[in-house]
Image (cartoon, rainbow, N blue to C red):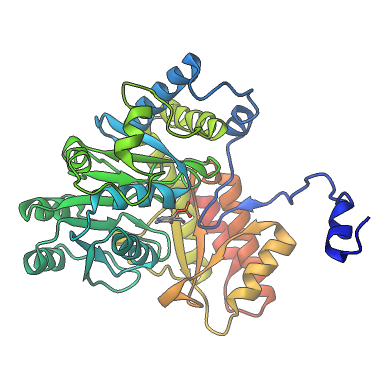
Length: 402
Ligand code: PLP
């Protein structure tokens, strides 16, 4: 026996009980409610990451990713890790030391793009737009002409502001005219909001599984066209991250299927099932469902007397940025919803902190029962906290819209 109090304590087995997380309704910025079929797929026994049956599963996931991204890109893979891993795989491979990357300032995730580009050895230049608005193609054109960047990144669905980037083909065309490759953040749009990688001229897109795909985080979609992959393969200096070096991952996801790292097999099963659900529903019907469900949510908010932050033209159905009414403490509303209704929504970030609630309408969470529940609960909570809203009108408008 030792007298060391730390060691004595750690020698006792910790009395940790069975796993019983609360049964939440996830209507925040992600993760969304996971589809029961995806949860079932996750309890399927493991095979080895080089097992011939897993190689077949990898092929299927790649095929399903191409369908969901609307691309023929051969290079379409799940990156092991969360959306930020796919983001870093995109930026860390496509931006070489000394390259210039043009990034947006209109939300939290443009800032993360900038940070990753700097760490990759790139110089960062910015194109401005206020938080809550999309980039203006004329501003992008000006910034391209001024800086002649090697890479241009934009966020298709800005989760921090609830604004959707519109006019994507105008942005990609301008970038290509100036010789820049285009990287699109589609974390909060994939599988929920119209996204057409090939038709819109996007060279590289990364995404997350835990939003409109209703899959747990852990294996994150990434696609690159041949032009982008040529640049990656021709790099003089290898990518700074060994783990995310796409020229090395080429040996695992390409023809060789040689070991690079042990793939998160359970997450790949989950993503396969989530993408199978997309294919069964049909990608365009799925975009339509998100529009309808979020439209009913929006109608309820507006009838209640709450405004949405972004203009209708660039409203993002998967993430509804609802203005906090005057005199209301957003934190009190969010914690009441969690404690009394088991509903998760989120507060604003950065420039919009304290100004908006962020209410997701994603994947399996984009269902009538969830929308009705969140509109009811928010209306009741705001009334209880003394806000001037008409909860009944909100409830009626949502039901009428469904
Ligand atoms: N980009 C956007 C637009 C996001 O919303 C997120 C996560 O919310 C990310 C990137 C990063 O993804 P993750 O948190 O899964 O690493």
